[in-house]
Image 1 (tube, one colour):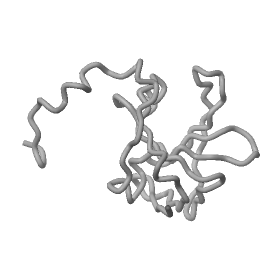
Image 2 (cartoon, rainbow, N blue to C red):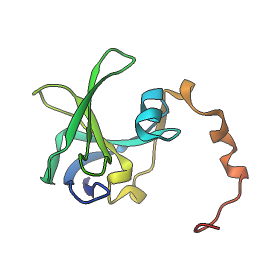
Image 3 (tube, rainbow, N blue to C red):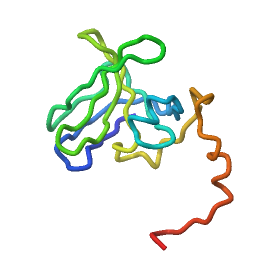
Length: 135
C-alpha cells in the first residue's frame, strides 16, 4: 500500500510503501517515553520503503532493551516523531509512526507487543465518558 504523511509543522513530507497487515501497538517503556503517551502505534514499511520528498529528518540513536541500536527519526522544527529504523547504510525497514500518516484511519492494528509494560488503565477506557470535541 502506498501512503503519504507529514510532520506537524509541514517541514517534513514523505511517501512510503507499507505493509498494511503489519500495524502494531507497542507498549514498551521506550515507546511510552518517546511518544509521551501510554503506547505508540506503528506501521512497517517495505524494505527502503520510506522517501522524504520535503525536508530531512534528524535521527537520534537509542539502544533498545534488546541491545539493538535504533535510529529514531523526527522533525528538527516541531519535534514530530516520524519513524524508527536500523542504524547504518544497509537496507532499512521503517517503523512509521501512525500519527504522521495521512491514511491512518485505514490502518488497524493487528497485534500489541511489549504488553508486559502496558498501562493497566487501558483496559478501562470503554467505561469512561467520551466527547466529540472538548466539553
